[in-house]
Length: 136
Image 1: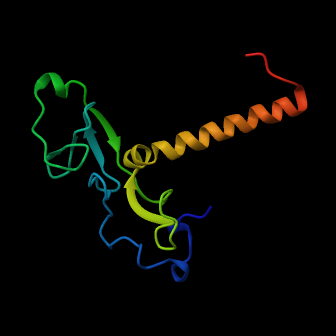
Image 2 (image 1 turned 30 degrees about the vertical axis):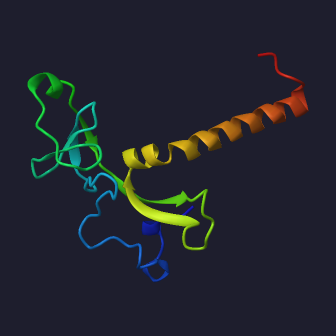
């Protein structure tokens, strides 16, 4: 599937295109393309020198013990589609949001688990069809 940046400019939907500046995650506010310092509890240090929580709110500075668990992470923000399972109206069927990889995995956790379970059950069904029942 082609990504938004892979398509020619005349085929892109301008309503979802990011601003000329680097896009930010709509959930936590992480900037695109920056290497950030992240703590295990979800706090991250912005390039401006301000600590934010995993929800995007300003957070207190960590102490030395908390900072010992810091890791660096490159923030990549992309356009993700989210299927609305409850409302199937035309405008809500495929909601598009700019999310970082972390927020995408957190917000779409249930959908990813459902797809993984369905795929594993399909593999078991194919095995039963061609090789007989499995002994688990």
